[in-house]
Figure 1 (cartoon, rainbow, N blue to C red):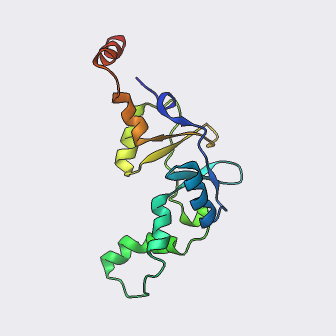
Figure 2 (figure 1 turned 30 degrees about the horizontal axis):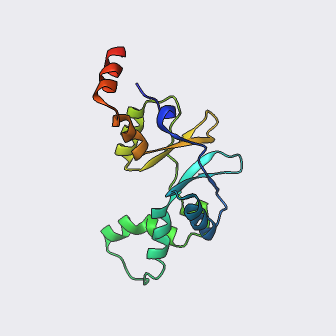
Figure 3 (figure 1 turned 90 degrees about the horizontal axis):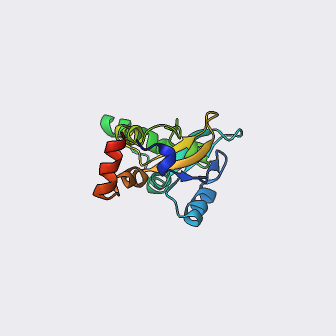
Length: 156
């Protein structure tokens, strides 16, 4: 059975919790990624900041200060909070959902599906990022020939 370390992207780029909105946007474009793990002063993953988190800030920047309906207020409460954010700590989704490198790809897929997330920071025992696994990485397990799949099931 494949493990997370078999399919993850190693050495993920992360941002400090104090990184500004502009810094994050510039790094996303520079690194051509859609999200970063956010780390504290010790280098421990504390959240993830994604394009979606950043879009909330821009999309809601000019929202009029109106009385929201009960349902809309509940749904958009976190988004309104992020709209005023200026640092990664303000904008990130937390706590971070992380995974260890020796976990199975199946477990990673289940976490992504259950939590409705697109990527998982892969962390060492101290919680420091060592990789990232995306939905595409998980699906790469199925990018094998029939012979490879048969050989894998025979050896299991």
